[in-house]
Structure formats: structure tokens, C-alpha cells
Length: 221
Figure 1 (cartoon, one colour):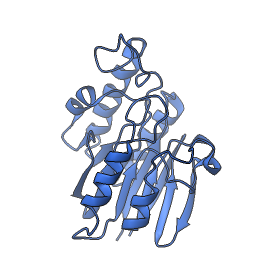
Figure 2 (cartoon, rainbow, N blue to C red):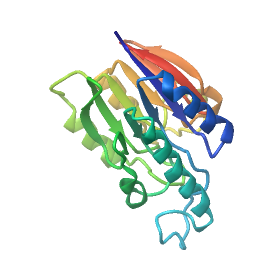
Figure 3 (tube, helix red, strand yellow):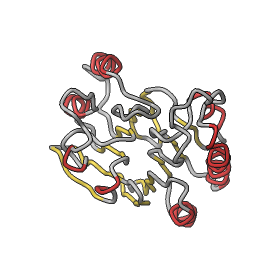
Figure 4 (cartoon, helix red, strand yellow):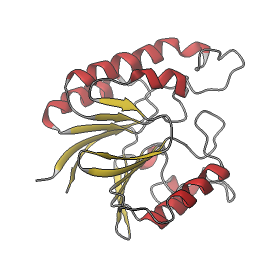
């Protein structure tokens, strides 16, 4: 028996995508959101003293309400922020009975799967920016992982795979492609690149899934 997983990303407050996700939840075993539920919260501002852009209060409340609703379905869930979402101090308290928001890179067991979650996005001038030093830390830490990784979850796709032909990734920009190549997880789950949303692509033994602007149901075996 496999795990029926609902994967969503880049809702940007869309009522259609939000209602679609809630409609799917009774039929699946678990839910992962790869970020960018919000649209303005991650925008830099000197007035962002509460951990999000001052114009984004309503959408942050909407995110809080959405995750509370998801938790009522009593299905395991994970929310991993994108570059449009608020900061860690805002997200950390959103943990529910059945799930939590990922606010730092971490490796853990979940639903019988080995998961590596990385809440950092290649730099684009907004929030949750991946740095070269953090990428190197990850590569060093997981140079020889004790167990194979089943799910590598992040917001953005790796360079060269479902990344809109790389048009947003300049040559020196850090992406998680080196981590993908090193770990070769069974699944790489992401969003971020809207035009490649709803697509899958295989890279060796890894199935890369980009759920941007979509809700996708996956059978994880």
C-alpha cells in the first residue's frame, strides 16, 4: 500500500486553489504545501517589523486560518515557505496537532518516509533566500546520509529541471541542484516556477514534481 499525498504550491491566495485543496483532503493520506500561499508577505520593507510586509496582514491571517482548517482534517501536513511568505517567527507558531511549518532545514521521519526539507529559495530579492554558504553546509552535512532520502521538499526547482528553462537562474546563483545530484532522493517536491507547474520530470532515480499553481495527488510507494 502506498501513501496518497496531496501536493500544492503557489496558491497566492487563490480561492479556487484553496477550496480545491480542502476538497481533496478527505480522499488523501497527507498534505504538503511547498510555499507561496501569500503574495506580498515576503516583500522586503523597512516597515516589516512584524515579520511580513505591512500590506500583507490580511493574507497572513488567511494563511493562519487555512492551516487551522487543514489541521481539522486530522491528516499529517507540512507547510514549507516560499519567497512570498512571512518569516520564521510568524510561521513557527502555526504548528497544529497534525502538522507544522518548516522554518529551518531539517531531516526527519514522516509517514514512514525519510524527508529532507529545505525552506530556502534561490535569491530573487524577496524572503527565504538560499545562500551559497548554506548550500555548502547542506552538502557537507549530507555528504554521506545514514539513510536514503525519500522526499526532498523545497520551494524552488533545481537548476535544469522544471525551472522554466533556467531563465531566472543566473550562472552564479545557488540552487539545490548539487544537493539533488548528491542525494538522489526518490522524489524532489517543489513549486515556484509557475509555467512549469503541474509537471513531472525524471532525473536519474529522482522524480521531480513541480506543483506551482496546482494541487496534485501523488502515490508514494
